[in-house]
Length: 333
Image 1 (tube, rainbow, N blue to C red):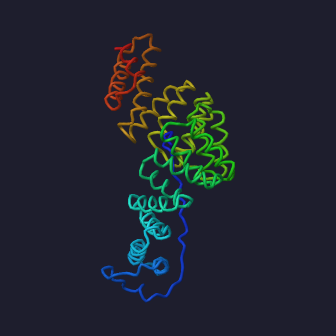
Image 2 (cartoon, rainbow, N blue to C red):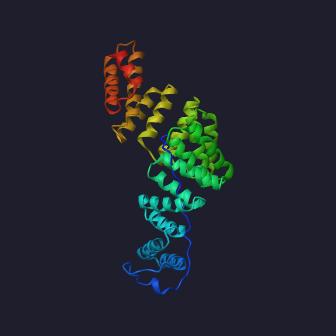
Image 3 (cartoon, helix red, strand yellow):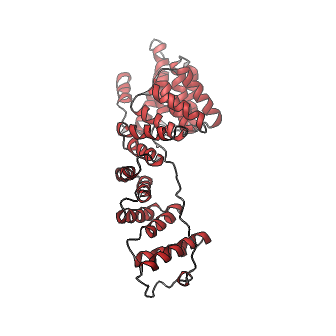
């Protein structure tokens, strides 16, 4: 889940659809208005017909067969799961959630039903409900990688890194070669202010996966928290070369400021604002840079002071909840 810083990411784990072959008189052009057999075997046949329709690439026919199977036998888990899978792969997460919920209610001991119900709730940003579903899934399979990984992400997205930690660690233990799991654990460590541990995980993730902007930004942030500003700057230089962004330039400005390279820092903040004029962290950085110029002039460069106050006021207009910026404005106005 950046998680800017959190914003944490969800891994997409596609479930293999169970595909069966069937030759059914009822499978071709089924009339939904006719009376259907109530035989349990007939319901199973309808599910097999739905599976066969999937193999043909006929999604609508498959949905009709699964719906008829549920009409015949509402407690047929395979039919609910089949509908859920189709809706999920189509990106219709609301309908998929209802189908998986039905499957999980009918068969609480079905891991796939519980896990995919949790995944749909997660994708719908219903984090608390997703956590409950993932926990039910993990009671059935405690060592499942995806459930541990996604449960950790959901807890983090609820700003509960301490709750996320054991599951993030379990995901890494289950699959230590997963870059995504290493990144996820690093984010959780950072949320707990364990930045030395976070850097170690980010560095391992960098050896196992592509160097994504999220990974490099998170690594730079934790390096900055450890006052390793040279490494922070080098990491951001690498990111800016491949994928410049307002966030990357703003963090580069912060690193340069800490390295007392004030002119370069101000230039980085200005570059950030060229990419996104409303990126208020860069406005804060620019304001602090101008205040620094004012102070180094023995408080004689009033033009720098006015530029600083203008940048800080604009930042507050964009994001009001910034007590530190309000304090700076009060002190220097």
